[in-house]
Image (cartoon, rainbow over all chains, first blue to last red):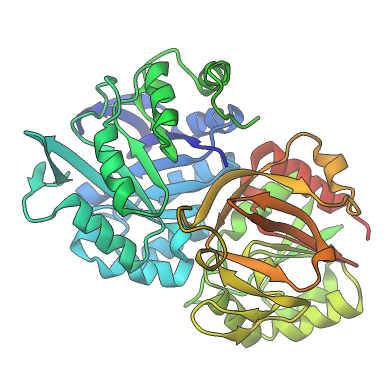
Length: 250
Length: 213
């Protein structure tokens, strides 16, 4: 079983963007050509988040999803304002393999259960934006730009697992775009309570961060800024990790 | 040659990501049609039964739309080459156990059980991600075709346990040897998703296009 290297791309309107600490999003090119490149370079999976959809409570950008889906022959997880079974269904029909729920699951936890029943647990990913404040972890609401005080991340994750989610994606908000390393502490805490795959995102900067993620047993290692704003790419990354004796897929 | 992809979904049940199956067959070099009426099975040369989600929903939809009889006719009687993918393999079993006990299509004597009832409990479920398959035999000439590209994408919580082990052509190691693929006569079915498996998947689908059992 291989650990997965997963490029994570953000969509705003018809463009690819990348920000820092959930803010200050800069244009980063075409979603379609970027997705194509990731596919050819052997990404193990792709995460696509429509950051406009849930922020403005509008339906996700189906056209972009469709374009991306045509380019990739790997699993595609789509996040962004998916607030109903109907919207999820439409995303699946046009090319998503997994549906990511973030704030829409906080608003309506039963949506997790409805999607799991219809598409199976393997198709439901809980997105957990987590912020660390004074050594405490909180769930972060990107709409209000605030930590949610009465939602403990581990308790919420456990509830989501009981409702049927099959995978968790942790995004460390206070690490996003910083390129100063993953937060393995929250991953390890989550690992103890969750017997499902966990994707860790936020903070990947250098190759040593990725080596560390392999050593920590992270199931899915998400890469954002590292692939967007540097001369790094998956071919180089895989080659390097191979020389470090990490188990890398051909 | 036309490959028919069975679309048993309706407004309540999705049949998974059919477009990616179509798209990847297109890249592998083959024409496909989506079949939502069992009668159309007559018109195609080969058949793919994809599947995502719970076996119960999938088998219910297949039966509700009368695909079971049409499949028996076209695959078991007429011998058209058949490929089952993921849940499309699991529903071939006689006994299904997801959301209660029920009957599958019954082409394979055996049952489909939750991974948690067969692998050690320190293993993460679903078995999700890329894993390498090991061939038990190569009567399909598939190993020859895919060569060293033996890693495929898996995403499942249930696994097929066939009574007759000789139909197992390949396995995958996840703390235990799980069935990766079965085959007999004109029927082949696999637990992984070739349509999501990049180069391995492309070679796999090229094999299916060329396969003449």
